[in-house]
Length: 331
Image (cartoon, rainbow, N blue to C red; front, side):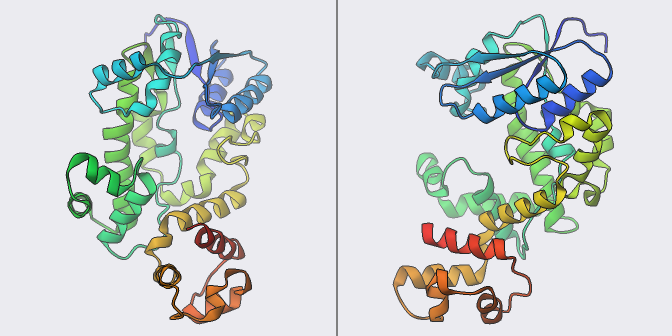
């Protein structure tokens, strides 16, 4: 687009930046790959995977080692964004300061909203259930803590979210949730991180280019299910990169069956409080009563068949059965 300056790709261990690396390499556009190792080592797996991507492309990977964010970093982030980008991101400021200001810094922002499936809801039957699911799935803090910090009641926070969801409701809860992820989570929250970056560098997010974004938003969700579209696009650019595991999953994007099982487990993890039979078990366990069958009070003796017959559950994978047990044991 007439831009000049060196291209630097900010690498993670995920799929979005990897797709950009594959596209740049396929089109023979010169670029550098830079990643970071944070002080808490939470990005260690990302760096390991980024090295695999760099090796596959026969390119070096530069890694910037970060210290713990200073008080000045927190203050600067607050000054720049006035709370619109949360303080937990202060650690990234030293990384941004070390990137060349004259270069074009590319990130994979947007890939998880445009190429990945958005209709990943468990069974939802009301706006209130959807609001509770969103709070449980996407909150950075508990609803109780948010209410105490803002002096806004938990009920008011929930009802305001319900009103917002109702204002966009058209064809069902799945579409309402997808609209929330795009309009609220991406456009009103994640974009603040991009704006933060642009205080320091010439940050560009190619996947959010209007033409490409509009094209990808028109792709039916069924084609994106289990990351099938992501897999096909990455395979078109580079087979080797497509088969390198995603650092977040420890699975390659081409293993759509395993990804399907992973997504199902994630759905269950965040929706378990919406499930009446799980609520009943939790309540009875907390009260130490025997209002439910003994087989369900003893997780390790309850069989899959007993769960299904007692609560008329038509489909219950063995993975979800084990997951129910582990979650309830840890509650």
